[in-house]
Length: 113
Length: 111
Image 1: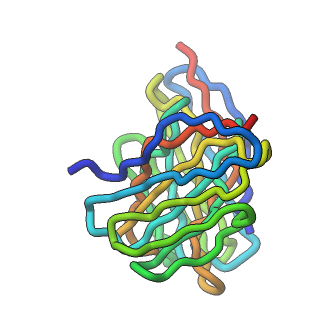
Image 2 (image 1 turned 180 degrees about the horizontal axis):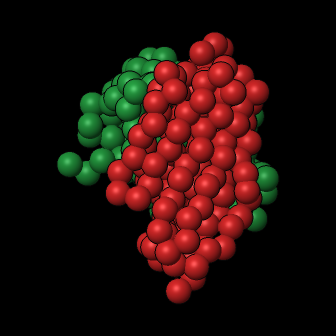
């Protein structure tokens, strides 16, 4: 059981470039989330999904896109990278939304220069 | 809307107790507590559902007052391993029902 796996662990992007942060889980969880964490700050919800084919915006969705074609995968797309998107990105999953814990991936540290 | 945590930071000597508070302006269904060590992912501690229950394991426990929309995390006889940043996450009764985290409380335990 790998849990929640994120790739890559580190990435440096130039302004205007695009990239996809990968997230996959092998626990058959319905709910998946993307958070960003700026230095010394809390976790801000970017997007979440309650099942394959269903996604919704969180608190800070601008500049990002997601898709959920399978239960296992929930990639996060940055189309035109900006310095404000420099952050650590965490993917998480849970079996249900309310009564169970969320398992987090190890994070992707993204720097936009 | 983000829950508010207090204090923002606390320094304790090993063996002392700490209380971390989490409050929301919205009615809550559940409160989650997580601990994050520096450079690592958040790790689950416990979930409290509405009903005013108290939970705990080892020397870490928490309470949930749904009428006041508040939760408190209690760390007793703190150990060095308790150091880290503690986050509460809340789910509301209404709206989009997403798990929203507070800004965190940094706990430092010194020998």
